Length: 263
Image (tube, rainbow, N blue to C red; front, side, top):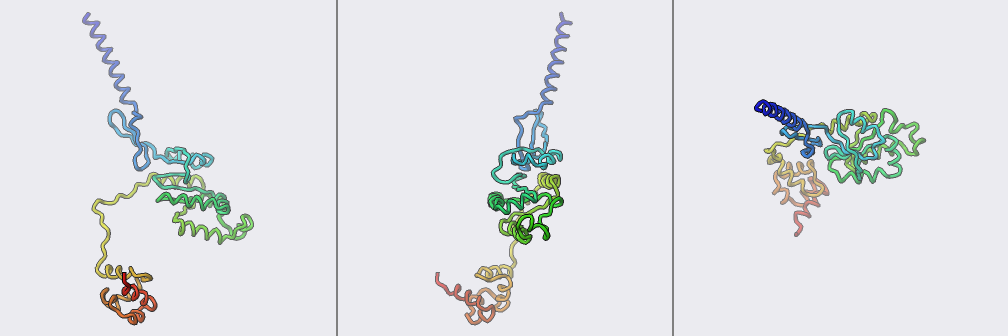
């Protein structure tokens, strides 16, 4: 009988060890979480942490594009959703992607203007114009014949996108190049600001100049001119209208009227 119990105990121990190994090798899906970088982070039962693929949110209408396939080839996780704004979301950066032909047509029908307005909801945003190596964005000889638009109209609109809508533009060669840009953005580590970072303080001269620049139509050059002439903020404020006009012209009248206005 003792021999029987020894054999049974050995078999029980073997089964227990096998089950234990199996549990350790399993990945606890309930521990999945998304960190700030967009990477999916998982933690096993044994407490170990495993960093998985960076995740890119992609509008489902981009399935017809080659870009998502290239993103997957480059080791990124692609999650398709219905996005109301933008085509790609990468680390809270909204990206609107346009091929050259799409850009021209959406410019003509004003659809791009609406998309640029919608992008303003995101603090960080980009417009990617794809295919500049395969198709000219504008060619002076034939663009007007093809689209009915003068090349300067396109140039002007590109300037408007950057200056008025505050949307940076990136030109890419092809879908693969677009995916490479997105990947660089996805894996790029954000620079952390030190806890002891402080705003740069003005020196004494800069403080005086800052006060004078607060007057309407007074820029750095005019502020320096006034301070060099009168020597101090107090002297500028106490200056006569004629002295101010003699120094900075009609702007002197504006300053004098503000200084002597009643609140």
